[in-house]
Image (cartoon, rainbow, N blue to C red; front, side, top):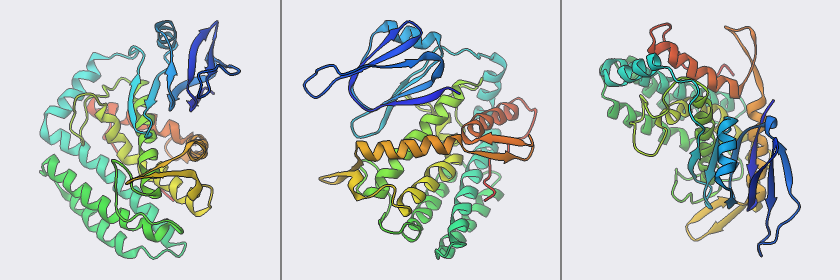
Length: 336
């Protein structure tokens, strides 16, 4: 199965017959031994270091339908090279646009996306409650918001997002109970101020990146969203779908990596009012992230095992069916 490759080192990437040739360079600019990546083994590339490449390479990647995602020095997602769309469908595009422009239709989808995300947050809290972490008070508060959202029939999207913010605030308070040796002390983003916030920002970036990649392989327009407002220079539909999967993929992974001490204080770089994963910490996280995406669960409707990566693609297909009026959208909800 094709894989995601992460390029941490600065270097030059070029086409080499049916492979990619990556030549890393050291701090003085000296070339080191190159690595060859068979094109059929690549699903996507994530670039975390400085990359030298030319148009011939990007033409080749475009022909092979391989996206390239870029992250800056501070591990923020900055953009993607996306190959030309190959699953264009005017019927889906029109239906998706109509679902966005009609407030009642948009609210139905936005509410369900949010319901899915909050349900999965509650599952996380329940999981750790059963393991001796006293998080009942947070779960009770979130359940009140959850019911308000479920029953909302005419709520403006801005108000819905306000409730989402309230839920997140309560949910993040529980992190200090769930995580053993680190304190979150509230959410800080730009920049993250401590280790837990650094992991959340890093993980959320890759969850968004995952959703961008999976939407590309469907007929959906990534710029037309329902919960988040469409905006310039971003794929806002990926933000919508990530809302459902962040508790499942990002938060669970952070809890496991910290509580099992796989990521420790030495894996972070701290500067004035900022904290980021260093290279070794990033490699540990992304190795675990890849393994998480390959994990499979038994899908009840399909009666077969499905990977988490595939589940994200299936979430996109469910949205396609909803906007086409084939089947009502039901978000993925964790059962454990």
